[in-house]
Length: 364
Ligand code: DOR
Ligand code: ZN
Image 1 (spheres, rainbow, N blue to C red):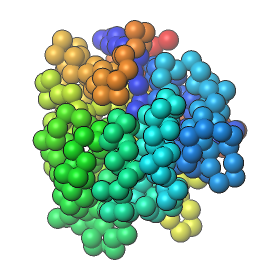
Image 2 (tube, rainbow, N blue to C red):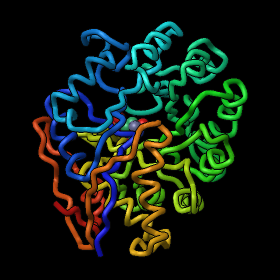
Image 3 (cartoon, rainbow, N blue to C red):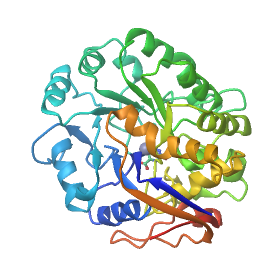
């Protein structure tokens, strides 16, 4: 069996900075990717619109130039969101939107994940002039939707977690206060978040990663498979089931591919584990496996259409750019995911870290 699809867009990924960027971009190109939204939690963060990179921050302009020089110039789309920090003002948003450089902003909960120390509480932003300016200018808000600063039991237990709290408490308030703000709920992991997005107006969408469609907390904990450790953490069966329903519902337009592929040269350390799963080179294969686990037959016209919608069409439509006219192909055949050697050190792709053999293979 062969799948022929438009080249797809990874609307949430991490290309980092420095010597390994070219390796990460190449891995994306190798998996049929036509463009990407490259997250701004670099070191230093992407916190300004234009001008040269400085010690305290990249600009969207300088970071995009860096990515293009490392191979991203062949992408049909490259979106770099602005990292929302205490330095972000309404004026910056307006000027950025007028310049055409600013298409999206990223909200990180303070200290909520890798390089999130520049984030600020959602409560400080709701009703404020930055969100008002974004709403007026049509700048998309990409949200890492987890309540920050929770202690253990509130952070995660069987009844609730940082994400469900955020979607039950912060998101209704955000939508009520900024009814026109275009929002992407990034890497959603729970039934609560999936149902929230499904019920929200059409200008609210969501990305879903391969790992959250494939795995649950049990997969992570059994054997402490730390390559599966990412944030928001993988959740429970009912959550995975709800995500699978979200992506396989006929005609759905809100849910689209965003891998959150996040390379870490060091995952486990003596006192913890870096958050992030690397799926460069293997994301469409993993998504295809997840759709099959959800019961879809990708050789049927219906299964093909649903998969294409999620991987290749909904994201461009949401962001307002054309789907790719180029094609890539995958075939049903087992394949391996070797270590990715980079100048910064080897990166372990998620399937290798999980001992998972891919059942799909990229074709040249
Ligand atoms: O697991 C994650 N890794 N979640 C994020 O939100 C950030 C990412 C990273 O940059 O490594
Ligand atoms: Zn991310």
